[in-house]
Length: 184
Ligand SMILES: C[S@@+](CC[C@H](N)C(=O)[O-])C[C@H]1O[C@@H](n2cnc3c(N)ncnc32)[C@H](O)[C@@H]1O
Image (cartoon, rainbow, N blue to C red; front, side, top):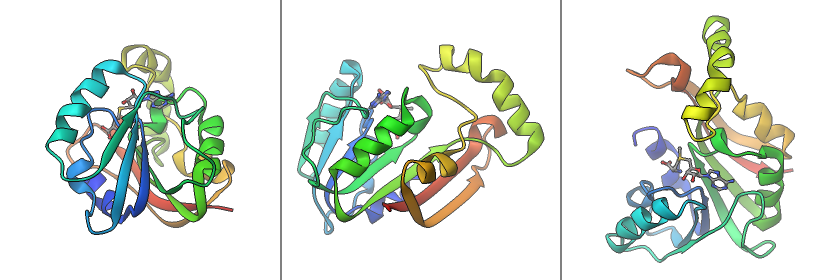
C-alpha cells in the first residue's frame, strides 16, 4: 500500500483502473480530484471482493467485467488510467497500452505502480530463470518485465518515474516502477 500511495493520489477526473482486483486502491484516491472510478476486472471472484470495498467507499465507482486488451470504454473518455501490479500478468502488454492510448482524453495520463525487471544482473538472472514456473503458480505473473521500456515502446513518455526496491521484500519481486506517463 505504501508503494501504491506514491502514485494513486495523483489520479484525477474520470479514472479507469485496469485490473482493479479487490479494489485496494480506493482509499488512496483523492476524492477532491476524482470524479469517478471505473474499475475493470476480468476475475468474477475479485469483482465480488471489490464490491465490498466499493460499498465502503464514498467515491463514485463503477465496476465492469473486461480485459485490458479490449477495454469496454469509449475513445477519449478517461482522464487517468491506473495500473497497479497488473502489467506483470497482462497477456498482451502492447495491446493493452494501445487500448490505454485509445481511451485516454488528450492530455490524459497513465499512472503505474508495477513490479518488474531488477537492475542488478544477479537478480535479473533469477527473475528470468524463475519466470516460466512463476507465471504458472502466480496466475500469469511475470517477474522480469522491463516495465519502463514496455511503457515507452507502447507509445508513452514518462513525466516522472522512480524505480526502487521495496524494502523487506525478496528482491525478485521487489523492484517497483512508479510513475506517470502521457501518450506521445
Ligand atoms: C496482482 S493483481 C493486482 C490487483 C490490483 N491492481 C492491486 O493493485 O492489488 C493483478 C490483476 O490483474 C488482473 N488481470 C489479469 N489479466 C488481466 C487482463 N487481461 N485485463 C485486465 N486485468 C487483468 C487480475 O484479475 C488481477 O486483478
